Image (tube, rainbow, N blue to C red):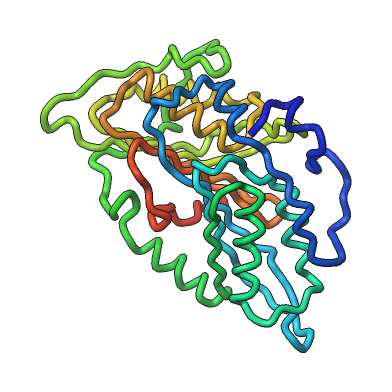
Length: 294
């Protein structure tokens, strides 16, 4: 993640590119996380864990005899990786397999993992599924309790039913109103919203997300939280930067005993990006099921 000027140089997002005719790992475009974190003022001492879960729905290749194959792919990038991979470059890369003959699904999985790990600077976990298995998995996820370790929330707040504070400055975390809780009141609160919008830092096109925020140990006034989230509406930032900015704001202003941010972005060009950041270690299995808008 870089600021607009840094990420624009060589970035394929703002250019017209035809899909490669052959397998082309060189099209992958890494973007360093460090610059955006420095711009946010993310302190190295802030306890932050998580991962970025990409879901790829336009993955196709040929088997040994030339028959087209299709699959769904889970791509898990650690939040500790030095770089993210720019989304358009990933689409171009995945499309470069369209005319490639591969010996097996395992061969494709291993190739994807190796190339994405090289681009991001850290191991990337890749899991392929055929569409029949994927549909069954989604159905099972929606039948299970959501949230870390399958826990149900003690208090679920739909922020979208609350009013906005007028004239909030963009990204003004000072409007967040929080109170510490004691005793039995310290249970988990969950806030959800479908109103989040930010903008691509290169094209300035809108990025839409559903967001879930889980906190313990504090009470957050809903209108102040919704107003802060809506203040991103004209902010130009990558998905990961937005999630980390929100994580930092709530950590600094509210000091919860635990905090988790989950942002499920709408699909673009066969890819959706889901960003998870928490004050505790997260497992890939704790990724949320696909949101209704995805």
